[in-house]
Length: 295
Ligand code: SF4
Picture (cartoon, rainbow, N blue to C red):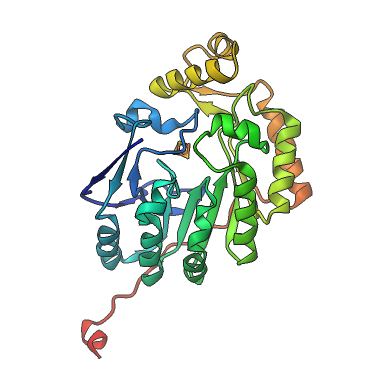
């Protein structure tokens, strides 16, 4: 995959709608494009205008400086999210360490953070996360199957599910709030009730505090085309079933989505997982008197 360094104009975007899932106030994407190549990834959709999502990663080389400038000006302390449009711990992060440096800046300015990832590389920044956790730090792992082999087919560039679970355990042991983002749930691929139950049991056994499920997947333009090509490769005949069943819909769900949700809720209750994560309530930052700061 081609790696290109670019200069970004801004890095910290406000989240304008109230965010019930993660309580985000700001969002940042340090890269554009993603090396994890999940076959279902929504970021391929035309609405996001990423021309070559699977061929090139753009590295925002001035991102850390932009973040420091932005945080210095903020008067509301609210959770900064990262990981919505690409994975902040994809392999290129080992080389550029943008996420690691951004977390250092967030620690310095005492802001809360929510990291969404599929990678155990997040453990590299454990000490920084522990520091940020004096305010609030949460790490959610997207896990869509408990099975490493199926995970390799549907998320070919991401670390194995078992490695994500092991990382979750270490974060939880260090006191970091952690849990599972169970989405998408791919109809006819990863929606077997027994697998979903096993996933929740594994998550609870590895220190997860919550599971946030969304039963189904988006199927939009380029995303759909790419997904169907990958289904043809790994699950011959299945794209025909999708076409017949879902036609042109933009959100595809398992037939038994309602009963699956009931099963997830009951299992979550049984194993002690919440279906909502604790979030940070934004607060005002008192302005520091520049004279006082001098002394
Ligand atoms: S890790 Fe996330 S952003 Fe990256 S390809 Fe997978 S779903 Fe898309």
